[in-house]
Image (cartoon, rainbow, N blue to C red):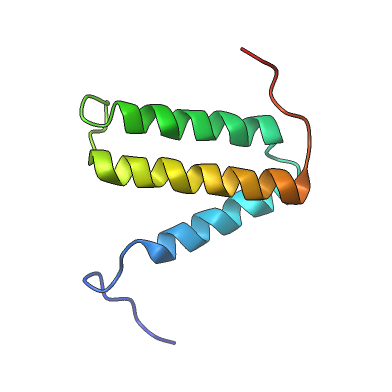
Length: 88
């Protein structure tokens, strides 16, 4: 088994784990489509408030995370279906 070198990683390992975890939770109906939509909104909001958020982060990184979360949400919605969140 290979070892992970922190200087080599670009976060891809974590992203793969989290994508798989979201899909698994959705498959087991522990997350609804509405939950995924809410998570997408929260990540998007965090990207808009990157510098002043309680946990500051790079604006560019937050925007990339928001785009990735939207992509994941779209995939999960198409793959597993379910009810959308009601309009707020």
